[in-house]
Image 1 (cartoon, one colour):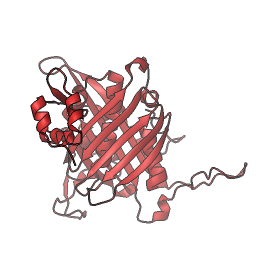
Image 2: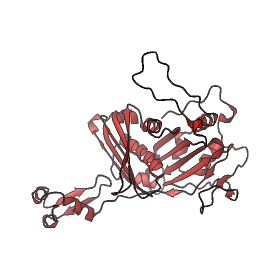
Image 3: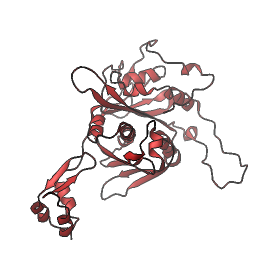
Image 4: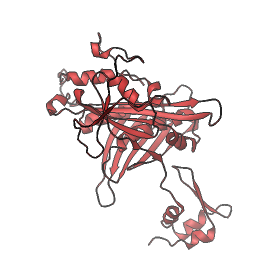
Length: 364
């Protein structure tokens, strides 16, 4: 996935980052008892201890940006390995999981954030279900005959649409945003969503890769990481973006332009230096990655939000699902003396005897 091009020539603050930092500039940790940052907030050096399967919210007040960073290890690996997908499909689904984690973890209420794609590509459907505050599950459908060597995420997706749904429960209406997929990847789709729906200057980076290690323990694991930043100045006119193309404007009509705020230009340039390996490196902590990016400006981090791979399926839930079928339909489901139902999210299989299936009362 391409990084945002640096300015040419680059300004002083966009110099290449190195492992040797000039001085120790502390990360400011807010007091957990209040959401407001105060002068009494704890100040310490960035932690060198990596934290997997968690979201780290942060703020760079000097640039008026807020963001979230996630590094995913065991949770991502658990979801992907349960399905035994081909590697390119696993990588694409992993990117969708990372994106959903960044967005779903922002929910401030009990509900669900669901990301779903439907496209004409080899991977025709992806569903990632994030249930606040921390439960995650996902699966993909693909056509193995259409998979080819060298296909990237954009080629696997093809054309179609991506839906982002916020479900606040049975007593509340759903909110859904739709984005066209026109040959781009999930980063492109996320940028398009925020441009057209939220109209908040936003940048997203996603990375997923395979980790191979020797010695004891698992030899192969999936890892992922991602970061999202948004420009949220107090003066809304500073975040104004160019109007969208009207579509039916007369030929030759000049496109509307808006001069980009210097703080957002600087933020995008710094953000564009992130490498995939930094997002998935199991030995690089999220705090030290943020320190690499924003140590000259200062970065504040908030308490991490843990994430878990956990499906909501159960034997009782499957039995309730069987109620929606007539007794005849349930009888037709019997194969080899059993009714077997497999969850597409976690690949768990629930088996019922014909007698157990018949005992489930049909829905009225």
